[in-house]
Image (cartoon, rainbow, N blue to C red; front, side, top):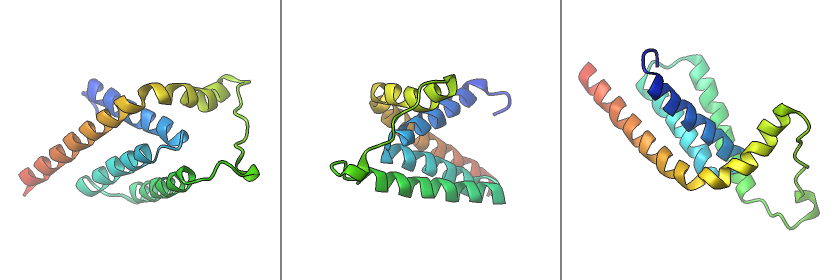
Length: 130
């Protein structure tokens, strides 16, 4: 990303909005973040850290899938209250609840397009190497 600040901002936006989607239990956002990370893992230089982070993101996909199937009718299913006393609480608890409904559809399109372009670019790079 050095020397390409616009692409760095696009990738930052991709992962930030993906994190917001995961925070709001979006299975699609969890899968897209995991898929982008795994595409980078397979087509670039793999490392132990990337493999461990991929495993964490895979468990995140599983947890989001389980959370999306949760039955909210039971008394045990009541979510804890969201905090909003400090700035960090507002950023972590209040911002996703406010932002995700506004950017959800745009993120679906943006994530699919960026993932497709990334995979296409990585395939072309690997084809040139061979």
